[in-house]
Each structure stands twice: as C-alpha cells, then as structure tokens.
Image (cartoon, rainbow, N blue to C red):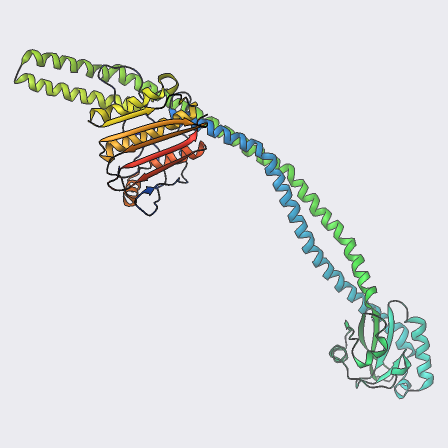
Length: 503
C-alpha cells in the first residue's frame, strides 16, 4: 500500500448469478497523514471532518455519523445556559474593569476639582478678607498695619481648612504671617511661588514639610499650599500664601468620587445584565438554525440514499441480469461451436463476466449492505472475495462473542474495508490477516498484510492525488471514542490497529 487511498474506489464483487446487497461506503477526503521517524510510519489522526453524507439504516458509516451529530446537537442545546452564564460572567468582569478604570479617572477628575476649589477659596479669601486691610505700611513692618491685617486674617481666613497664612515680597521676605516668628525672615521662593508671582495666576502644590519656612507647620499634617499675587494700594506686588489641610481637600474629592461612582457603576451593571436576555435569545436562535440545518441535511442525504437504492435496483434488474444471460449464452454456444470459434466465444463470455463483476462492484458502492441484516462476517467475506479471486490469501478471524453495537460494527467494517482494498490495489500483498476481538467492553481490530508498505513520501503523493481515506477513518474512530493507528514501512507491509468502544 503506497498511501492512504480514497475510500470507495472499488469493492469486492459477488459471484456470477448471486443476488443481494453488497457493502461499501461513499468516498470522502481527509487531511494528509504525518509521519514519525524510524522504520514504521504512524499516521496520526487528522483535523479533517467528513461532509455530512449520511442516511439512516443502510450505509454503515452513516449510522455512526448521524448518532455523533445528534450527540453534538444535544451538547449544543445543553450548553446554551452555560454559554449565557459565561457571557454574563464576562459582562460582569468587563463592568468591573470599566468601573475600576472609570473610578480612577473620576478620582483624578475630583482631585482636580478639589484643587480648583482650593484655588478659588484662596482667591476669595485674599480678595475679600486680606486685600481690603492691606496697606503699604505693612512693607515697613508697621505694627498697627500688622495688627489690623492680623485681626482680619484671624477673623475671616483662619478657619477649616485654612491653617496658615503668609504674605511674601517678590524677594522672599515674609512681611506678614499668623505665626509671628516668621515675620521679617527671608527664605528662597520655591518654583511654584516664583511661577505664581511671574505669571500672576493662582498656583497650588503639596507643601514640603522639610523646607525651612515650614518649620512651624510640621505638626499640622499634610498641607496644600496655594499662592496668589496681590497688590498694595500703591501697586506694590506681594505674594499671598495659604496653607490648607490636605485631608479636608481629599475628603471633598472623596465625597464627589463616591457620589459619582455608584451611579456610573450601576448604569454599567444594568447595561451588562440587560444583555443577558439578548444573549440567550441569540444563542437559542443559533441553536434552532443549526438544528434546522442538520434536519435539512439529513433529509437531503436520505433522498440521496433512496436515489442510490433506485439506481442500484435498476442496474441489478437491467444490465447485470442482461450480462449474466449473455455470459451463459456465450458459454453454451462456445461449447457447441468447438475450436477455434469456441475459444473466441469463451473469451467474449469471460469479458462479459468481468463487466458483470464491475457492475456488481458499482452496485456495492451505490447501495452498501445493512450489517444488522447480513452480519459482519458475511459483509467482510464479500469484501475479501475479489482478493481471493486474485490469488491472495485472506484470513478472516472474527472472534466468537464479538457482538458489537451498530456504531462499533459499522466502524469495524469501514476500517477493514479500507485496509483490504488498499492491500489489494496498492500493497501488492499475497496474504492479509483480519482479526477482531472484544475484550473489556472494547472492540480490537487488527488488519495486517505482507505487501510493500509505504513511506512518508508515499503518503504525500497519495494526498496530492486526493486519496485521504486513512485520515478520514482516524477521524471516525476519534468521534466514536476510539483510536486508529497505522504502522507501515517500505517492504515490510502495513498494519492497521483499531481500538473503539464495543457498545
């Protein structure tokens, strides 16, 4: 056997004059086999799935295929709730992810809004409580001016969240602070303060507790410092600074965040849950459409099967019978005519018998046997008949008690058929052994020939020619819960081993 031949290339023909049904299966393709190193070539299962060329009660492979499709259909039907549940879980996970991302974004927005409110609070405090009591004499450290501003600050500004107030000159001298120890001292302005003074805008940043000017603020916790340029009545620019408790700002941001997040998350949750009925509806419609498609497919193949039976009957009752009669007549005339005309007539009778065998082989292809009616032993004997007529020794060993379920019996028949046909047509074998046993609820089939075997290159060549029978059989064995292994090497024959559930 040089490669994986396509199933259905030919079958065993019956003896002349014999009526009945013969066995074969339609042709399908498969994926090319791969190989392992060493002397033996193992053809693993392919990913190919045969077309739905199925029917009921006649084609041995169709029974198993129909049952497998129905099992898969029931699995699809029962998996709808699981599919919808998975969809709902993914939807909730997506909602959670979006909620987290949105929460972070909302938190950043609310933090920015809290800072904006802090800047606005500082601006209002400076313009309403500080600037009206700010005089030019404060630049010279005039005590009455200092006292007047201090009363205004303590009465109108120093209340939660404001904890400290400073008034700076552009050169870095503090001309006023509610902490009197700081008045008159000089410190370098930080970048935020210089930016606020240069641009004339409100700037805010987290206070650096380690800075020298903040030595008296270290017991007040984390602070936010806000700078705002102000002017004295004579137009001298000063830098007003407020220290606000960061916790109060964070609390404001947190309140806004918590107020927005539930509404947003709830909307996402409602959206996700609203998709569950839609997912169920879509899954159900998909399952119904699949069921309708399979039903139509089965009906189509049943019609094809009936047409096959009609054609097989027409061939049997027409050309096959006519050739049988012609063969008998030619043989009878040849016996009466004698040589040399008798020899020519006998040659014509032999040609008619060969044509009759070819037609019977076609009958087997068109209308396979019903294994439940004729039995596995008889069906395999019919397959072996052409091999025996060609002079090949075929040893059929169907073990006693190897009573198999219809699906298992169909699979065994299909594998044995392919192996015997390949041994006959491609393997050039002189002997073939077919051994079937049932042990521990499993069917074990081994078909071994002494032919020329095949190699990886032969597999590739056969695949290129469209012959993929072995790959198809491996898929059928896999669907049935079993396995099919093929061992071959050039000059060492071929062995097919099938293991499958017997029931």
